[in-house]
Image (cartoon, rainbow over all chains, first blue to last red; front, side, top):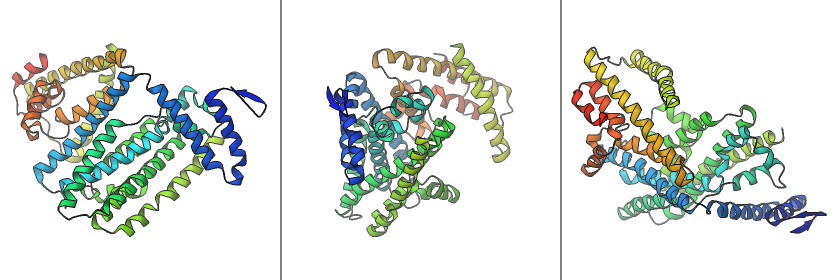
Amino acid sequence: MRLHDGRLFSGDTAAAAEGRGARRVSRFGFSWKHDLRLFGLLIRASVRSRMQYKFNFILASVLAALIQIADFLIVAIVLHKFGAIRGWTLHEVGYLFAVMTLSKTLYRSLASDVHNLEKYLVGGELDQLLTRPAPVLLTLMSQNFRIMTGELLQGGFVLGWAMTAMIRTGQIGWTAVPWTLFAIGTGAILLFSIGLATATVGFWITRIAELQNITEDAARTAAQYPLALYPKWLQSLLLVVVPDGFVSTSLRFTLCGANTASGCLRGRHWPLFCAWRAAWRSGDTD
Amino acid sequence: MSREWGQIAYQFVFKSIPIYALYYFLFSLQLSTQLPVVGFTFLGLACSAYLAICMNYLIGAAALWTTESHWLYWGHHALIMLLAGFFIPLEWLPDWLQTLSWLSPYPYLLYVPTRIYLGFEGSSALIGSVL
């Protein structure tokens, strides 16, 4: 128990209250540091609560890996049957698939319940988050945090396999490794932006599960394979309306060695994220 | 069980039939004119529906031990895509995966009724569904 602002708080709540105090001095430039500290604290609490169910945790990790392997097996079998498709070899498709998987893993690990906002809106649980002395988005992001071991292992394995093969054939050099890590990070920001945009719409329409099926699940599944496979209208849709396609377009540049162009292209993720962050704030305060 | 059958009937009337009609007009989808084939297809679909309900029941019951069941549901969905012939014909699978597929109930969910409808299999293929 700790005293803060003349009120008594216990454990995490005390730290959260300190976080609120920190936000007051955020005008002096301390906000990000304290928000990150608070985020870390809430995540630790979330992990501790999830690890109470050990069997469930292990089973979920194993099944997540199985799902990913089944998904990739389908594409691998099709590529094995027909060879390269529209100029994309099996290793390139594997690379794209793995980067998209790891980007999604990063996004869903760090902001799991942004995807599940409907549950909070319908069940009234959002009210509880609104009363907490911390930013709503930050609190939501730290709810039900889970390390997606299955996806991480499967994505890492496919990425390692694809990159080793491409480096061996001289298609890419070792410089592609840091660019790939950068692509995974920026891909996660892009997916988070789209997830946040969809969740924001939930403040007005409440039920967003079907919308998420289109903007998050279907679009991401489509974008984890080369855009060249799709008709022009779908390519445009994946680049303009639901821009998941930028992850694979950026990767094409990386594979070709045009790293500067790739970096410039990925710079578009930040304005997208900032725009939807502003929209979230608007919905949050309504 | 009644609720599940109701859900399946709802999906059949309001999703399957409109999509089939759309494909019929847009892509000139061929309709089977042989009455026995249509009859056996419906029998196969009824067996598939019952099989799907049983599998979903097992997944739901597993939650008594695992706490959460949605991962089992998504795993089941992934296996339908791979082993039930939803995305690729089972003949394209490697031998070991084909064997695994036919040892599982997944082909009887989708692949067997589809092959019966297309005229590639006779009514004997339904024995596996009934079993």
